[in-house]
Image (cartoon, rainbow, N blue to C red; front, top):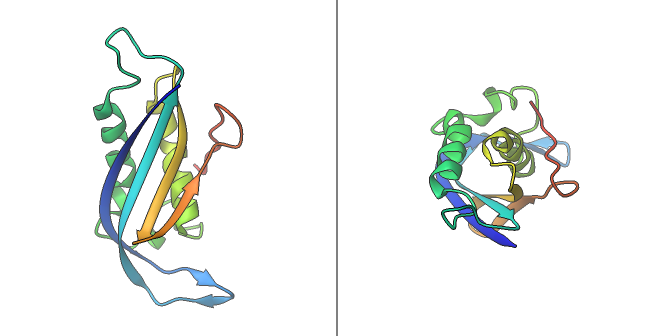
Amino acid sequence: MFELEVSHRFSAAHAVTVGGVREELHGHDWRVTVTVRGPRLDEEDLLVDFHVVETSLQDVVAPFSGRTINGIPPFDRLHPTAERIAEHVASRMAPAIPSACEIASVAVEEAPGCIARWFPASSGATEGLG
């Protein structure tokens, strides 16, 4: 089994409700890390080209960069927690990942040492938010 990781950083604000209390709007320097895995390498001895994963990740998070996540679909209707952002990234990136691979996890770090991680419900499954 092989794995590779690609990370991307961006700055964005959000406001979440914790314990029934809505926090003030605040910003983070987010880091999103996508881990892709698969059982074998291709004819070029690659699991998947880093650039394919990198471009897809950048495309998925680009709408959030420099903005307030709460107002950007699907977070105009969903709670913009790190957990939901990780799930969203996995859902949106899944079509860009070659069929011989799968997304093993997506980690979203919203502050140093504060990381939420998404894993597929079962091998090969990526449930989406839309």
